[in-house]
Every structure is written in structure tokens, then in C-alpha cells.
Length: 84
Image (cartoon, rainbow, N blue to C red; front, side, top):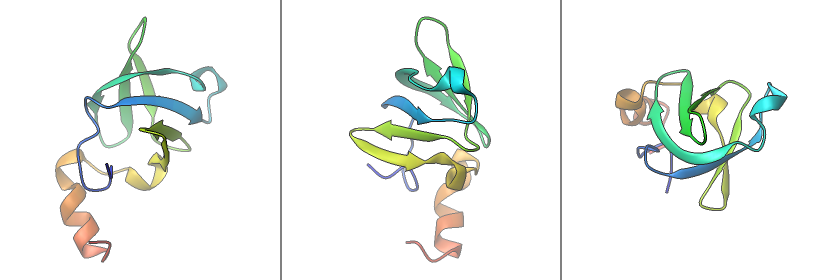
């Protein structure tokens, strides 16, 4: 799974590093994604900013600071940057 190219909605993730210490350790299903935030379903839905956040999905760590694009624009922007 590569969040640069695919949708992360429906994946189980855990916040490993974040600028807000209360977000560290939050885990659950990612239920929504916008340009600057992810919503993770746990006891209460948590809105996690992508800025300065590292999330572990399927055992791999992803820096979501570099993924601050609208979900529908991911592939187009990655092609322009030469990453695919």
C-alpha cells in the first residue's frame, strides 16, 4: 500500500509522531481524508492534522506532511513531481 498513490480511507492506522502529544498513540480506521487532515475512528472520531504527523499503516511508517494534497489530486501531483 502506497498512500502517495492510493486512498488511505478504510486502512487501520496508528499515530506514531505528531505535533500535538495527545494524538500520539491514537489508532483506528481512517474514515475521512482532506488536504490537511485525517479522521480516525476510535472511541470518539479524532481529527488528526497531516502537518508534522507520522502514521503507521500495515507496519510501515508514512510521513503525512509530504501528503498534504487533496485525495483526488494525489496521482496528478505525483506524476508532475516525477515520483511515478
